[in-house]
Amino acid sequence: MRVTARTSAFRFRSKELDLQEVGEKLRVDYILLGSVRRAGNRLRVTVQLVDPKHEYCVWSERYDRTLDDVFLIQDEISSDVVEALKHQISGISDSGETAWEQRKERQAKDVHVHEDYLRGRYCLARRSRESLRQGIAFFSAALEKDPTHALSQVGLADCYNLLGYYSERPPREAFPRAKAAAEQAIALNSRLGEAYASLAYSLTFHDWDWAAADKAFQQGARLSPGYVSIKHWMTWLHFARGEFVAALTCIREAQLADPLAPIVNSHVGFGARLRGPHRPRRRTDSKDAGIGSRLRARLLSFGNDLFRRRTA
Image (cartoon, rainbow, N blue to C red; front, top):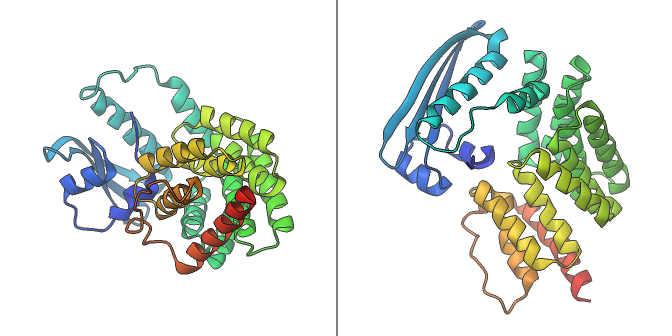
């Protein structure tokens, strides 16, 4: 079973939804709808699992909890959705204890840590110099409250990786910080695939250690097979090694999992260019409209440099 990445799903947040259209764009058979209302310390979460093709509500539930129960709500909703899907899809296993144990390992122990982490991820997704610096501040605040929160270390690593990649900070300063944060995340939770992906990013773009990067990417993929960034970032390792067919396979797998992510769609088109001007290319211009002009310029600058190196 494939779950569409958050980047694509969130493009429909706060919009009037035509469920059939959303289902077609995301290439999914089911859509999870939800709303959250907060009054002081009280939360009301309403969730619906919908079949968009037939516009049929498969399952719905309402959860009334306190803010302190936010992680419990997440677990309850996840468990209830899986139970609802079992009646719709064959092949879902009843034994999910290991997955739930791993999920609990990832969770923050405090709701305030979780809030700082989510704010950091929001800033990270915006990919500007200022937002990345804000992301570092949020992840650092989360780690001050809970030094054992491995996902916040991953967030730090990703922010520093991107600052180094875009040269918004000197790469020789940013990438070692990213690598150290990723290694700390692995030390805190060695089953966190995202941490290995962040480490592999540093090894690819700064150390140019292809073998070590490949090993880290493979470990990350084994631990977190649904993490889109692994396929996305591994594309560049294949490009660097001249493995253009493998690179295009990787980026298109990332696109399948996150079909509306601007950065992924832009790299699909760029990958076709690296493959060679005589090959037909898929048009992705309309899908990468969400990329800012500065980011597009940096992507093209990096890509042109890589292209010249590979074809010199």
